[in-house]
Image 1 (cartoon, rainbow, N blue to C red):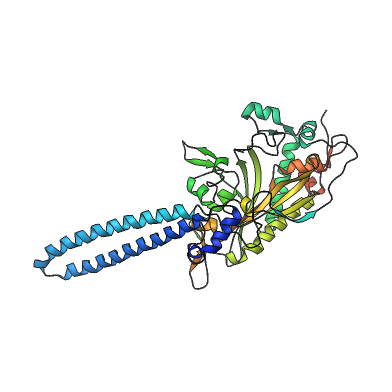
Image 2: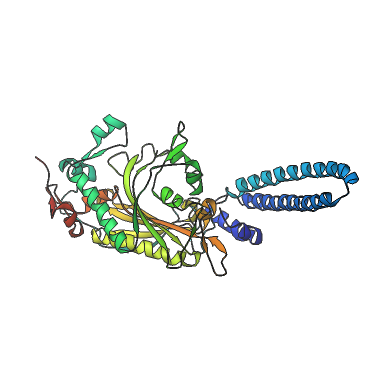
Length: 421
C-alpha cells in the first residue's frame, strides 16, 4: 500500500508512476476520492461520538424529572453514532480496496515500459566459448546422473524433477555457500514456513497480478509460497522494530512452489522453469532513508556469488511495467546460458520501500518516539536454477563439469563432476 499522505498531497507523482507501469491513472483518482470519503466519514463519526460523550455527562447531571426525556435523546444519538461507525468502517474498506489497486510508486530513474524495456547496467565476465558442440544442462545432468526429469514427471507431472547424486549435492553446495556468505554479511538464517495465511500473501503483494502463479489450498485457507520473501515479510507483522543498530537482515531457506501459469510451451526442457525448487532469499528491514543503499548492498552480494562461480552475467534495471506491484525498483542479474546463446535471469533484488510494511503494519521508532513504516527489500542468493548456468559454463568435451573452486569445499573437495557409467 502506498503512503496515503503522498497520494493525497502529490497525486500527480502517483499518476506518473502508474503511467510508467502501463497501468490506469484513473485508479489514482478513485483512490483520492475514496480517501476523501473515508476522512469525511471518520470525522463525522468522531464528531457524533464526542457529542454523545458530552451529552452523557449532561444526562448524568440532569434533575430526575428531566432524565427520561434526555435518555430518549441519548438513545437516538447512540443509534446515530452506531450508523456513523458503520459508515466509517465501510468507507475505510472502500479506500483500502481502491488504494490496493495501485502499484508501489516507482523510484526516479526506473525505465518506463514493459518486459523488453529494461536498461543494461553492466556486463561482467567473459562469455564462454568451446572447441566442441556444448551440451545443454539437461543432457549434462543426465550424463552425470544429476537430473531425472522423466521420473519427476512420472511421480508429480510436468515441470517436476529429481535432483540426484551430484545434482542433489550441487544444489546443497550452492545453498550452503550462499548461506555462509549471508551469515558473514550479518544475516540471521531462517528456515521458513512454506504455507502462509491469506493476509500474509496479500500483504506482500502476491495476490494481485501474480495471483494465478500461487498454489492455494482451499480446505485450509492457506497458500504455498513461491518465495520465502512472503514468510520473511510476515515474520514481523504487526510489530515495532528497533533499527537503531542498522537493518534487520534474514536469510530464508525454503522450498518454493509456482504454478507457472501462462508459460505453456516455454522452457519445457530441463529445470529452468519448474513448479518446485529451493531458494535462499535475503530479506532486509531498514529505515526508508537507507533503502536505496541497502538495495545496492544486496545486489553486490548477489554479484559476488556469481563471480565466485565463474559465471558471465549482466545486471539490468527492470522496467516499471515488469516490476510487480510491490517493487519500486528491481535489478535482475542474468547469467549467460551457452546453449541458448543469451542471458537468462538467475536472481533479482527488489526495493519495496514501505509498500509491504504498510500492509503488514511493520514500523520502527523515529526521533521523538513516533513510529513510521519500515522499508523492506529482498534478493535471491542461491536457487536451483543456478545449476543450469553452472553446468553449461563449466562443461568439458567428455560431458564432465569442472567444479568452481568456491564450491569444492562443500562437495568434499570434488574438483570435477564425472559422467556415470
